[in-house]
Amino acid sequence: MTSLSGILPRTEKSIPLRLVAIFLLFSAGIILMGLFFYQSQKKRLFLEHADNISAVATLKIEQINGWHNERLGDAVTIRDNDPFVRSIKHFFDDPDQKNIRRELVKWMDSFIAAYDYSGISLIDTLLQDRITVASHDSVHTVAIRMDLSEVIDSSKIILTKLHRTYLPASKVAEGYSGIFEGVDYRNVLVLSYLAPVPGSPWFMVAKIDKEELLFPLKRY
Image (cartoon, rainbow, N blue to C red; front, top):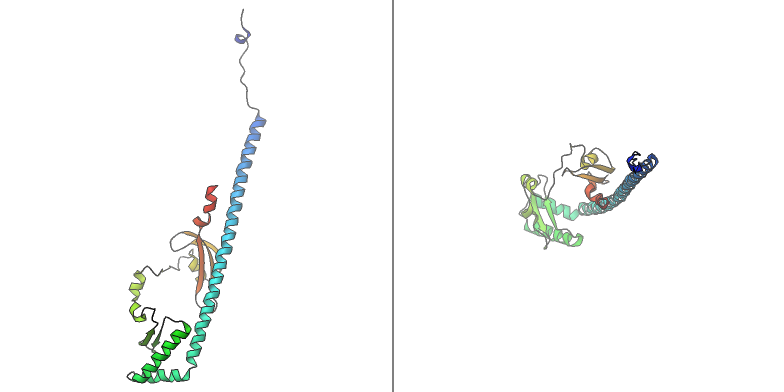
């Protein structure tokens, strides 16, 4: 007796196109939702950090303004002190007058104590240091002076090439202020807040590396 399985052709079951379409749409939806979530979180992080760095920069600018105004007030106090100004003129005319020098040093000491300066230098129009008085807990100003070449070679100062227009600092030099994305002097992508300091040629740059900013998204 012949089996029917040997006579009838074998048929393979196929996946309905409708299920394939549903699967593809479902997968595309998940991918789109993931991209939307990633972009929304990225935007949220940018806004949060933009607010943070702008707040920090604004606070620092206010502190600098306060410090600057205090220094201007101190300068006015010195300018309007006629006896002190006359003593300076007499000392410049004759530096060998020990009594006048003693009076100037005494006044400078009292000014340092009253206004919390680390030191005061009396400099003539040729930028020559005539008298320097430092507070007891500070380094003498003459001892820490360095030539320009030494300053450039030291690690305490950073020289920024302002002609590179994608640097945040160069944007301030061009008059730009606000939030800015660019590359800093390290060639690192940063989010920056740029703002001039009113009443001075200075400017404030507060920034955060974009890699640090986006680090929370790496867990996704």
